[in-house]
Image (cartoon, rainbow, N blue to C red; front, side, top):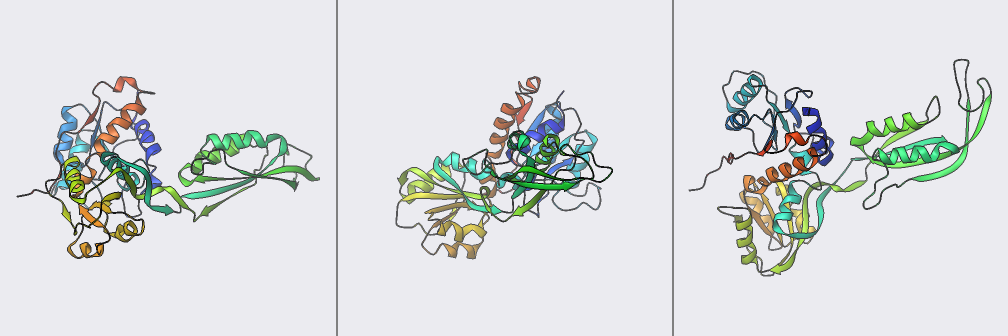
Length: 372
């Protein structure tokens, strides 16, 4: 049987919750992590109609991009749509999981999907983040060093950009003296020991820390394992908001805007003045992107595709870039496709019985904005 936990573990391989912004509310918002899953409904927003759709399709897990509970709930009286959704989900034993900015910051998330829809190539993160990397240093007897390194690599350590199995190693001498309660692997308690040891240093993403520590402690032969972990300020080039890439073939500005409107099914596009040059470099951001305008310009973008821009923010274009606001829903709509495809592929590995219509893309159109 597949549990909610099995599904969320697969989701968090794509977008670990540590990627989420501090203000956000992500993860399992409603339900029991050990509940058996009858079906998964994937949606952009979780509304009452979404819960009804889950009930109709025998889906007791809703995977939603936006979190239905964003700020703290002080009561559950059904006086607004958030409270009504929560009440209906609980009454019907439906779990609700949201990933929001964890997926925004994933290299394979919302902005990547936007870039894919636009056919961009040579993509890079527009606003790479720092603070996601840590460094582990440990000391091992020479005979155990290879096994320890391999265990750390298998747990997710030692990945830097396009390279895996990265470590720094140095030979040296370790000393220790065990007390009466000690049970040393090498030497005898009560005697000062000098042992040839290997200094091993590896970098890892912080969400893998528990797995890496488990690998270290399970593999290291010493009774007491010497190690230290430090946080790094290094920028991680594959974690962050937005993406910038290139069109395979440059386009006139008007032709690009027509294409943009077509592929995102936008009824209207709010934009700054069209610049008098062909479009090649395109920046996208799957969130409210006004804070990234200067970065898009600095990165050499000809167009910055985002949403939720305010009136005065369009002045920031200053003839250097086209700011294209295609709408919040329009920008994130393909998230449903992304997750249905991803979960269908991943869950096949351990729960093929859930397939055949049990991972469903919501048919509800949840855009609250209408155009006249």
